[in-house]
Length: 421
Image (cartoon, rainbow, N blue to C red):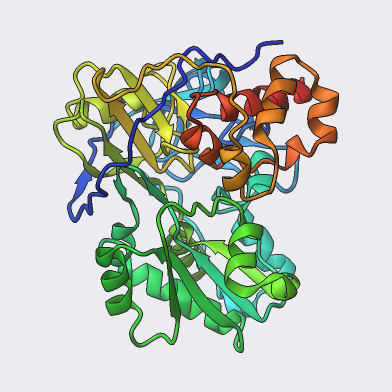
């Protein structure tokens, strides 16, 4: 059994001033497209194509026997070069499908639908088949499941609280994707006619102004929060905005998925790209990049002119992972990639825990990270889970505030991975 390596743990010494990016930079499609069949941590698809097969854009190339897991689509047309393994974001090897892009983008035709005529179960199945993956709810994303919809709800929270220490990623929602974002809200209004819809955002001036202008005629309330409050779990987000009493009547959706949902529900159109914030002192061109599915980290490195990064982080700086290889596939749900210079990374060695309690004070789940860390290091995984270690939402706040630079989050990931075998 291979455990997470802690050798590439990254400590960033201080918050940087958040950069609001207004330009969208498109990354050129590579010749070889590499699609991971494990888009989430522990739920893999099986390839349904073989070497030398001709595929079309929008054709299914991977499916799971688990009916809750959506399919994986090719974002280009071309020929299957090989089915092999590549190193993933966590350092493990995963099965991938490599397709040689023919540059023609011949597309598989998809039938139009009328979502208003679908039953709830038919709508859920249709959403699953869009191939979108929930990333904000820890329980859901660890199982690799699709976007969760409720049959009925009184409250809807659109969670746009995704801000790293190195910039704002949400600006593209009220810029490049604004039309489909509004279409998504209209669809929610049609499906849940009396629901109270709120948008949870960071509280920086650019974000609040952008969303206020976009949503001025929608009757959607904006709830701005400090960017240090990371809502990576739907339960934490809904509890904070609508209170514990309304949890069962509240549906939380990843706001960054709403434009893709709108295209898929209204027009049965697949979304073959994602937006990623690229930053760090090693890149000469920081900004928001539009990347086609099947791209690799090296494609973003080249486009952003990151010549010699000392460390690379994928995800976000608090909840991300050290990137082990430039050949790593950019999976769904990665919102930020940092190419960090040597001077930018605090290389402090971790020292003994001083029992200051800062990690416990900041933990949104009221855990005792300092105790869980000792259990993980001692491989006492039974006690780790008895003390609610499995409830960790992996926000990374404990590691960030720790004065002893303890590798708290990484040790928790190790314990969880060990439990899965």
